[in-house]
Figure 1: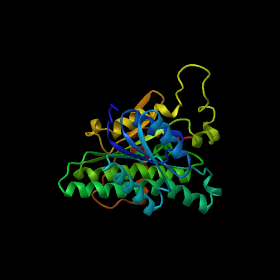
Figure 2: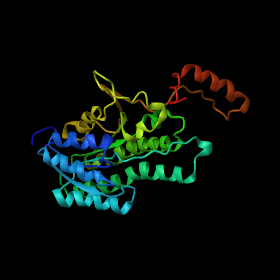
Figure 3: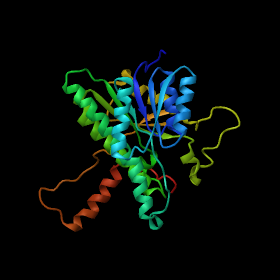
Figure 4: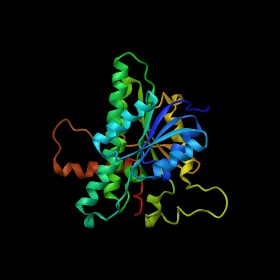
Length: 293
């Protein structure tokens, strides 16, 4: 099969439904050999759909937030196809709750699945590519992580989810810096699309509605072309970046930047701090609204 990802071996986590399913289908359509990961039988259905369409895919069921399973997932892809070219970290869940009523279990689960569920496969894929590089083999590998507008701008009622997604953004920047020497690029997307997760969030329900006619801007498949390109060999000069994607829109997120400052050649007094801060805030860009506020 021809395409921009022809014969590239790609692991996609959380690919049994929603965005992950669309990424897996789109990657396979562009020639990738896809390992479809998810917890349940839906991963097998996606793999079967790809194979029936003339692509190549296998299902691998398991919890990517489990360090040991994540190692098996990466090792299994390499054993089946002989190598690994890209990892698309997509698996995630939400347990939305205002902070004052959130339980410890809701906090721990969301951080575990979203943030650790990115870190574990990333760590083991990176170790494989580092070893390949040290052995003198050429490496041209890709990691595509999944953040969120909640992680970039904040979102009321999603303190656990937003914290995890913000962590993924920082993990992306750090991993990009650490892995560049081994021939690995690391980028992230912050998608907005209709998925079982977003449909369950009341504040987004109207936005996610399927239109009666015209372009379906919230279809999750709209995000996948960006993921396919980032996973391809063609994107090698791009790393450490976060892209927002919704409908027909792709934008580069600017992230935290150093802004206005005031300098004293001595220790500040508390009385001086307030006026200086207020001055700087008049010079800084306006703060983006918090989602759902």
